[in-house]
Amino acid sequence: DYAGSGYAHSKAILLGEHSVVYGAPAIAIPVEALGVQAWVNPRAEGLYLESDLYTGDQCDTEHQTGPVRAAVAAALEATGQPGAGLSVRLHSTIPFARGLGSSAAVGAAIGRAIGSMAGRTLDPEQLNTIIQAAETVAHGKPSGLDARTVVADSPIRFQSGEVSAISVGGEFDFVIADTGVTGSTAEAVDSVRVQREAERGRVEGILAQLAEHADAAVADLASGAKSALGEKMSTVHGLLASIRVSSPLLDSLVAEANAAGALGAKLTGGGLGGCIMALASSGAHAQQIRDALYRAGAVHTWHTKVVP
Ligand code: PMV
Image 1: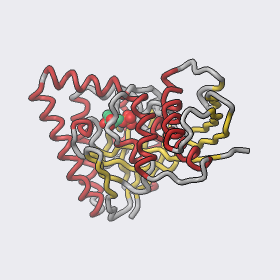
Image 2 (image 1 turned 45 degrees about the horizontal axis):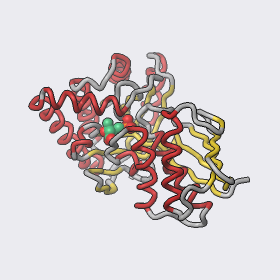
Image 3 (image 1 turned 60 degrees about the vertical axis):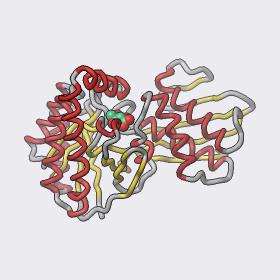
Image 4 (image 1 turned 90 degrees about the vertical axis):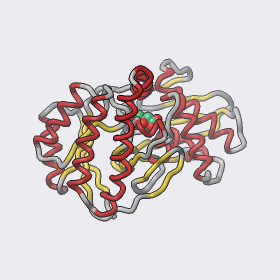
């Protein structure tokens, strides 16, 4: 029996990861198949946390519980109970540190749970502040894209904090496949920063191409142009590899998806590990791509649809 509960789904970045950090547009989609449920109860003092990852009074892994603590503090503040004691139970089906927005979804679920405990629905900006508090602990300087996508109910275009819903003109069947290897977004973002300082011309050229592809893909979604979108995804995978945020495992899953007839495939999220995302030509084709990716060593695969 809980005083408040909240849920948030996962997300995937379709195009624009990394360049979004430098103010370029990005497109991300909600992934309904995965999510985080949070339940909360008042407590005399301190934070008691029970989750898939950790149970106990003390947090031993700052890495995993830091975002939870930050979201709790921000949500208690937003609901006028700063510093109150709280017991939190989390159940997440989102694999951790795979570019699927697990830290943002944890923040959103906690924000909603504490809001419901306080008897109110937080407005979108309050909720975003809470999610960004969790994201900041997880990633350092997040662009804000994940925070907006885990509470979105359609694909979004995001640029410099501004978010807009994208109109969709056809059915798009995406496959997401997990390498099973964690990738540190903070490390990947930092590596791009260092490369950009050392080779400004080359890296800015690549970031500009990433930006152009993300911007142009908005029209592909609107018109149902699957082949055009797939081509952009494949080109973008090559561009991301050239700024060294891919990995041999990500490259091999992308190649496997293409061999299974995907219209395009790329890593999704920060990279260095985590997931790939492929575009199938139909729901049945998505199942074939999933089978091929499991045979190639993916630890999990999901089919997620974008529909008008
Ligand atoms: O790895 P994820 O899903 O947290 O995505 C990171 C996306 C980046 O563009 C690499 C970073 C950011 O803050 O947007």
